[in-house]
Image 1 (cartoon, rainbow, N blue to C red):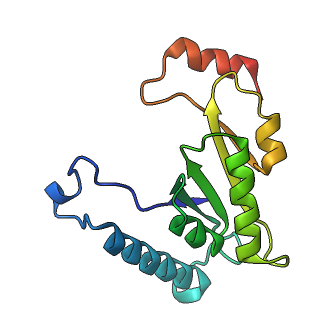
Image 2: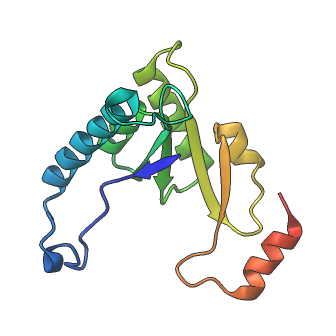
Length: 151
């Protein structure tokens, strides 16, 4: 999988390096870059990827923004950020289903939640991948506990 998203310039970190900070322009560049990648993978690049018709692309979207959801629906998966709960994921699953139609093929939905969270409500909401999140500064004990608990 290739994960892609707009990113953010909340603290001026992009401008300091001469990168585009305007979200609309970053969105345009992201769409353009993804289309170029798809063209490379479709035959403009040798050797072609083993995964066919191409490498799956998952798009990140910060809740409750919808433009990235529409972008994700054109690709293979959605990694929503800051979802308030499984009901919000179910809303996104329905929305993407409407955008893609019934015969569009596989689409993945990623749910990330804190360690110790029961994944069942997320799976029922449509998550195809469930990830344990540990925040910005995970503690070793918390991570080891999650690993020992298993899936």
